[in-house]
Image (tube, rainbow, N blue to C red; front, side):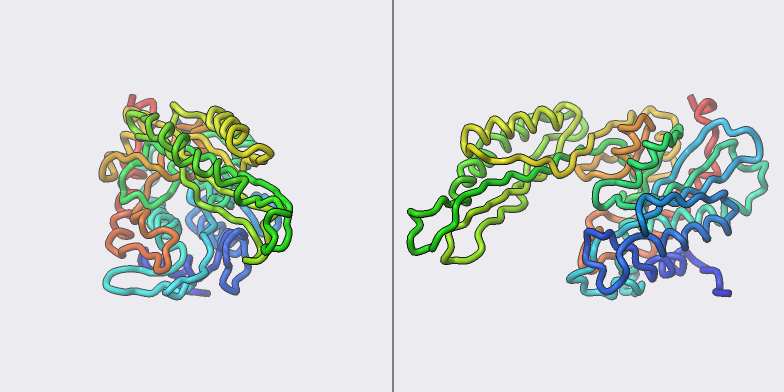
Length: 384
């Protein structure tokens, strides 16, 4: 029987060693999907005393739910929501599936996002479960590890469709132990134009799809982007637009018959996806007729008040408040009616990078912060 990890870093090493690359990313020779890591986490949670259920979304894509019931009637339900998947590993400059130490940093895919925060939580739960039952609050703690967060939050969406409920949700993300109580929403869109191909030596015989789309691309820069930037939210700041992809053509000597632009638009509660989509359609009619608009993904923004009892309790265990311009499962839970925040050790700037890492000291601090939250927690009713 393998020896149980004897530190948060050893626990993280075991987790990083199990690839769980989202099928949308380069798996680096591993099997895509979260199945192996989900099975490991389910076993680990059972070892800590949780009642565990594994709920498949698709083959190799599970959600893992571990429930820690209190010793008396639960007065509140709080969910910790890490995600099982990581991004791909192409171009990494460190071994993706072997945790390596360098100058106090722990490197590997997922070390920061979000196996590091998950390791900190599991270490805290290990210590919490050893406390006398009478010292624990009357709280039902749930670990809901979701599949597919990196590409559409499929796992969190599936939980909500199945009727999942809680009084508060903590999406595990690297937030430097600040409570992210507000985050922007997203609207990702493809704009596609078509033309007619011909030999590049006779361009007048064709219909250049890139030329068709360029006036719209310029209007996005000169009209829509400034409009969004002028729409400011008191917590989340401005809305924004990024033209992240412009693809067209097959070769230098062929008039392109297809072109597409990919947009990443960040929203706040004062700017809706429906409103921006309507504006995009109007710009397309004016500047690039026959352009097709296809929504790739949309997700709502959220703001959880700082005065929320559970958010204040987590702030007491952490290092302050923050707002984010990135999207995570907290957005999904909040949209589903569960007050939510994002929280965990590590720096989001290191997520998805070629040498992804978390500082070992931050990992230890994260375990202490989660333990403070678990042991100081009283029911939400008591806090109001």
